[in-house]
Length: 224
Image (cartoon, rainbow, N blue to C red):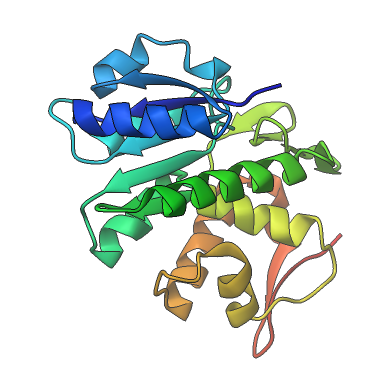
């Protein structure tokens, strides 16, 4: 079955170029020219969103935040399209749940490669549908986390941190290993950023926060 992609960008010419090339690569593609237009679509039907950051009205960051807060759309991967090159903007996007960034101007082969890579990662994560420890559950297909049946709103980074630790229970990961596995290689992140995101994630998983521990001098792990 062909994968469905929604391109959201206020540049009409760019939308047409992306739609043409993605269609040629075998995807089904729709376009929207603003965040407001996108919200009028049934976003839950799409397998991937290509989302411009800088748009009049609702920005790409605002739209991504709304999408990731809805259970029916939280698991849809997002690739941001942006002329912004600042590391802080990239980190903000990843914290909101972005799966990748493509900086404008970009080549069509690069765009297609990144789309293929993100969809491949998403499909592979769906192979094992759920991670559980007692009342802590991660639905990998929907990318939804619940604690005792109540949904927990995690950023993409927090989600990936929890997934890494939960599926490798008892294994210690150094900060560098966490950086290598959770953050994209082209984003500069400090050890402090790892600590901050671990702390945020711990607070959100309630009574299971005590399962995520720090081994001083070694790193982090999930204990039973």
